Image (cartoon, rainbow, N blue to C red; front, side):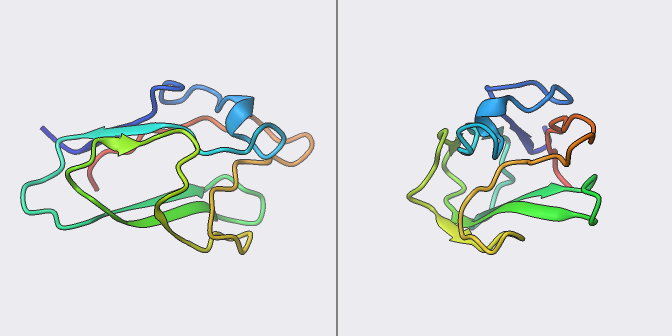
Length: 111
């Protein structure tokens, strides 16, 4: 099987729950993955919004994730994080502009 990433908090292409948005609690959603390829030494997670009016926006960058882990808990904090496009080394949820459309979640597979 191919590497698969999903969140137990919502389905792919569903609207991201308010809890995980900047106007909500602005905490990272729980994530789970399966079928990490053999020989993987580390995982990296980059959460991007390709539909932002200003172009692609990075909301979260996590690195040096143990490939033996099965995911990240909601509100993950004790992890290595890089700066996002808001200048923060943390998760910053979506904040669609007024009048903008919904932000559907898209699960990632192996690229």
